[in-house]
Image 1: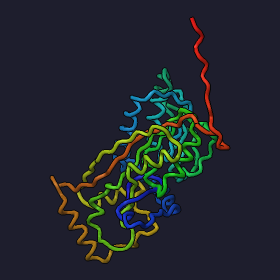
Image 2 (image 1 turned 180 degrees about the vertical axis):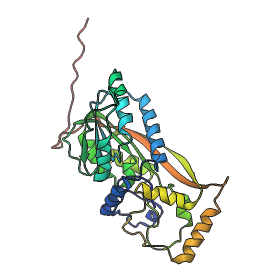
Image 3 (image 1 turned 120 degrees about the vertical axis):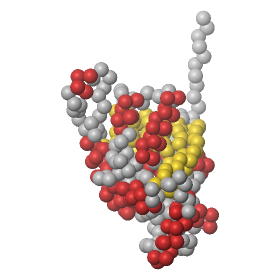
Length: 315
């Protein structure tokens, strides 16, 4: 099983050198179904969004257009609108039911919009675009910021998406993102029966993400990692949250079931032995970061770009 959003990456089986691939059609169907159930089942995603927003306190940026890529039901849109009230915020997701719920959200009232708030809001639906992160329908250099809360965790190869994000950002534009690392759901990974097939979604290592950002053309990537632990009354509660957010395993090599009733009972018993303080833990390795689109050093034809800056006139 996996935890929220749109494509993915290496994990324990990667050490054996086998490739990891996701079923994109299955992912889209699961996220489409989750549009009706994800709100309220995503405390982890909301907490990560809060932490991403705090990071922006230390970054000077005034984007004119912001893309929430992999927006889900649009829970981050109001937060972005409040922080950047002069910016146009655009929602994008590859699951149409998710996008429909995001589009139905009313934008925040602008500064000084007290009368509008007193009258109960209103306003036009936020602009929304059905889009795959690997092929964005925007022109080169047209966005000032891309916000991506856990979308990268649903990619088996993040490079094409990061290259597209780099393409659509303007020079000086910012990518603010979060994703999940390999220790995510480590308790579940440890208790499920060994054997063929991917039983738990894989996640890419932070250092590999940094390398991929540089390869995609980004400059000065900054990242950090921390472990967060959710606790559940029982294992079924964890499974329910994963299903509600569309985050169950979509590996093309996933087994179609456990190895019989006995193996499933043994897995439950092994997880039960992890109980502490009356609750079962579920660990999530949270990777957060940002990176900038710097001015290009070469032209499209490969020629070097040399920039001349005039000397200041003498006083």
